Length: 391
Image (spheres, one colour):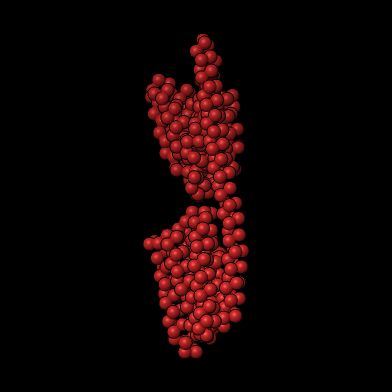
């Protein structure tokens, strides 16, 4: 119920979940709806009592607020709608202090609530300017009432107390908002520093892996035995898959989430460069956590490498890599049109053993292998997709 109110009625759905703009948008609309309701309550009483002057002002303000609610956020942004609300309610407050009214409590309601709105939505600097203007207006009213002996809604003594109370409330809110803004600024600075640190860590990790790959490649040239030479090359491919992970993490400005489509396509592309077999991909665009994405990348690297090395004799074959989002589960499939293999005797293969071991690290991962007509690896796991903007 509360989720529907915040998302639909208060229009939070138009802004990213958890963002400050979404919070500000919902509070703006809440302020509009609550303010309109309060004004309508007093408007009804003024209509019954025959105070048509203040009634006309109140209905005009309701119309302005309703229009603001309807056009936001399609034709106005948060700052524009904030100024619209602030101008309307400030005018209503000023009028409510001088027009004869049966219900003077309305002006006290706005005096207490408007400083909150001003400092939160306009910030400390603009809030100080607005409160300075409002203080001048509030100061003029009791002075005129005292000097000209004009009786407004309140006597000049009570008006003086209202002005003092307004100053106290505004100053308290100024202190609170200033401290909140300062904390938010420090938090933002710390977050940017951490981003730079993580970026540097991933960059250095990628560079270190490239150095290791270079050393392994240089040593593999000195090995004459094809079996041991192939072992070196296989380990280099595994390191390359891990290196691509760190490359994606620092280049995409996201240090916890990985674009799995881009990551897997880069792995397949690196394998395609050294293979005559055709490797195709059908990968849904998903953002996954780093651990899950890396394990999937290693599984794809192992399965595709095994297919390239063992699935085909002399003919040029095809390998398909797909990753689908099915409900709350992910479905990974690597399939080739090669000669297949006996899955019952696959325990001696390091690559197959590694694929099975990695599948157990995925959330509720289950794996199936079929080697009768070509080789097909099917892997299913719980999928936690990141919907937020990684930046």
